[in-house]
Length: 479
Length: 137
Image (cartoon, rainbow over all chains, first blue to last red; front, side, top):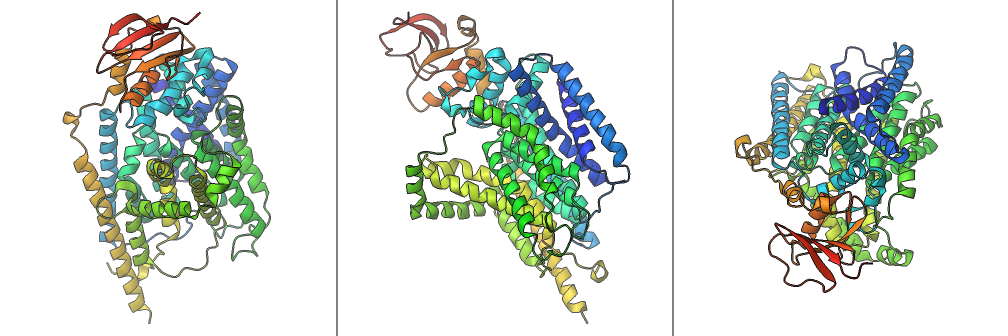
């Protein structure tokens, strides 16, 4: 039953992706991207479906799942015939060039890093079958138990009596876990562990395939190396926390948005299917953690901002102007999940604990020392993030940039600007939350800042290797 | 004319890539070294042990609703309580003994004092107890 549940889940995700993303002909990177996106989106679908079934008191899980699968298959079939000739242009920028032996070293290192990640992840799961850290069973798996074991009384678990369990946290992970437990008939701890592993591997797969599609193999291997060499990413991915799943959906949203817009020189309007999928990924991010709500809002604001002003240096192209339909498609993809979130927040969740009265928050905003503390911690975290050994990953990336720096023409890519602005806005939101937090500021920073960095890390690597390190003409390369 | 700057750029790019690979492999290597061999894994089964400790108690509790909680003081008080809540879900466990039914959790030592209004219904061993409030209707 475990295999059946995960197979149905992945099939649902795959059909959704196949229906929405135009296929790149004969591209292994495209296939890898679909395979990487499918399980995460499948778990998102499973989660929303389970929550709705709990809401309406439905109990025939397999029948409902099969119906959803048939519906997605029909959508795929209907859209598939229209997309037969569709083929998006490949590269955003030419790939980072490397001489043959450097490429061989890079390839071998990439393989080693991926194998090390897999080994470390599997061993960690065996060593911590119930997750590593309190949040796994005090929040995420506890919510899953309430959803699964609570039956008609599942709402009892989202109760102000147990505020430490954060009954306001969204339910993508708990509901997906509970859905698969429903197939098994019991709350097997293996399920959250497998889901953690799936999100960890999918995030790496998505990053590598996206860079392979949009830049090339060398950039993809460098990006994959950066992520899989981050011990904190593997540690959190297998801890049964929600930060790596959130990082997956943030990355998915930005990657698929790039697929929607295609090449910077592409003068066609953005594609509706990928736009909707990007909106859905952002909504799934919001259904994973409250920080995802901030990301979703930032994505919409960034989209509006770019649409209003047009991307820099591209004001004369037809795509720069007022293509508001892209925003509409983005929202259309998100609406079903946003409706679920709205209902949950309105009718089930208790009020969040991050905000206090206006007077208190204003007092904190007007306290300069708090800004200093936050900036200091941000700087410290920048230098130690990821638990890299000796040289932090952030510094390694900076060094790479310094060595490969070459003055580039001004950024023309509409979508790249949206992505960067979205992450910057989300980050500003995190800063604002720290500023007004009712908790002890040091405590809050100490126990959350590294995980906030982690939520951005795969997307930051993606955008870094998408844009930095200009190609060097192969004709000039000494072998 | 431009061969020299291009060659310099290629060399710098090569150094940049190799340096980045070196930094990454340092981290990867340490990650592997720090990972225990599969034969030497000692699973952290704290949640499973908690499930086992409370297994006998569960049939004596209501299927739904809220129960009270009485536990040991000290550093482990909160983690013990979280584990109890996780184990007894979908029951809601309030961190207070002011309820008709109260779960007692004393993993390391039996209670020296307990509130006057609580009557011990059953001691399940392993530090797990069930109390009833004398004040309850």
